[in-house]
Image (tube, rainbow, N blue to C red):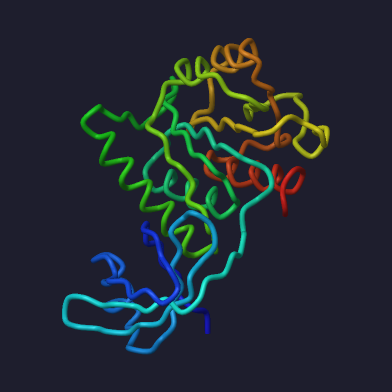
Length: 243
């Protein structure tokens, strides 16, 4: 039986008794029905994980006792940023979830000309909170020990103005190089741009190319945005990471 994992962003020490946050309490006790003595794993996003067991449960709170620490490292050797144009909410959630499972370190939501979903200033905090929840759940499920960062949405123009090291790629239809043919010594970190439901406009692709972004292709078929991000990230991890 798999031991459940929970993200709790605070320092831990072996032998420490920890009161679970409300959301973790609800998941562990009310959803998974963990009882006193049952094992669980805590991680704080700073590397490694802590094996613990339920030590006390009351109607509204629960405590765990930290038994041991494991310095397990499940992070990829390549630093990846997914620059994902904002798409419909359920598709965006799927794209972020799979990106975390595939080892991305940073997620940069992007507002583009063909973005169907528009985010007003008053909605940004709510959206970020929701996306961060998706990231946390994906880390808990996939065994990640460090927490990817979700940035506030930017326009494509603003993102291109941001100084970045390494390699920037844009997924675009056309006769462009394939990811599996990229040179093994490609400068890292790598940032990958994925367009919205209708793709990037020709002008946006040209703007990116003029800014030094490398166009790449996934072949002759047109993939949905959420499919394209997963496929491209898997290829990047296979070529430069640990898949």
